[in-house]
Length: 116
Image 1 (tube, one colour):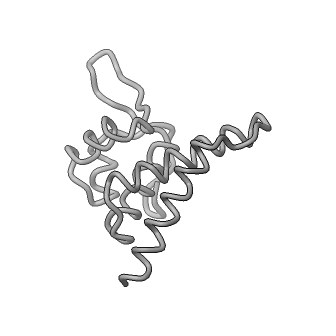
Image 2 (image 1 turned 90 degrees about the vertical axis):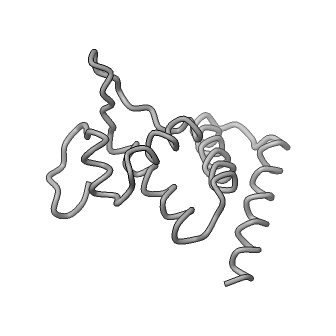
Image 3 (image 1 turned 180 degrees about the vertical axis):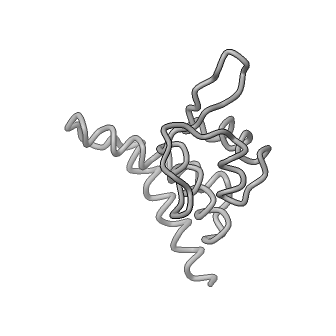
């Protein structure tokens, strides 16, 4: 997860919270809001996150806290990227809806850059 943390297959929400500097409730909220985090649930109900989930959490944190994006803007951008990646994998062309999402995300990012 970090240079000082040994690589593991799964991480608890507590470990991610400490490493990312985010409250656990924020991670749970992002899980519900974005739909991109897919932690494994143990029988006890505890979440276990993969490296992919950790990268996604850190990307959301970067977009929101460092780049000043709204959660809605970050969600649009990441959803569009995920869809584009899926289409590239199967070789499909981008749909007009996806292109619209990408343009909206681009415009929002351009506006943020202008304001900085």
